[in-house]
Amino acid sequence: MLAALLAVGGCKAGDQDGKGADEGGGGPSRPAASGSALAAVSSLTVKGRAPKTGYERSEFGSSWVDTDDNGCGTRDDILKRDLKDVKFRDGHCLVASGTLTDDPYTGRDVRFVRGRSKVDIDHVVALSDAWQKGAQKWDRDKRLEFANDPLNLIAVDASANRRKGDGDAATWLPPNKAYRCDYVAHQVAVKKAYGLWVTGAERTAMRRVLGGCPGTKLPAR
Image (cartoon, rainbow, N blue to C red; front, top):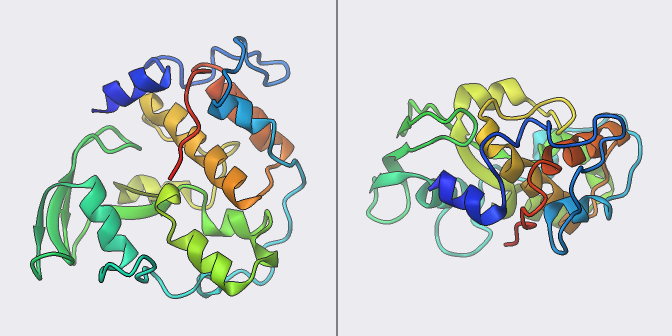
């Protein structure tokens, strides 16, 4: 499935390490297509990272609330979306087990068992990163929406997610190079949708990765 997504997005498996970009200025070696993630990078505001002062996870509301009124918390919604062979504890909502096939961050299969999971639900744009790039000025409702937006959430290998921490595109990319275009494209989409800014180094990194796959479309909800 990942190979098919890459083909649709205009990525090739060897492009995601940034070798297709101009190393001098981080610009693309091929023109950005209209509606592409690469073109959207230019719309992002560039500023320095603000202090992390005041950041707490609780500033983004309680973890995994039911924001879409479907009776399930956001974590279970994403598990149902991203896992295969899902089994439920209560028949429809609480995911008891499943398999994350071709984990985006590592390329491996990862088994999910509730209570001893090796699967995390990652914020593609980390909450702490968002806080330092505009979210500290938002009201509580907008931060809650951001923390539970499926556009910014993905099931991934837990150990890889812990290594990522709150890194942005300039400081961390998935070890699985085949996923880097899609990963960065999602970061661009989230930051554009919520008006978050990027640092200069971050924008350069985004252009470097997406320069290898200029046809990758900007993800949408």
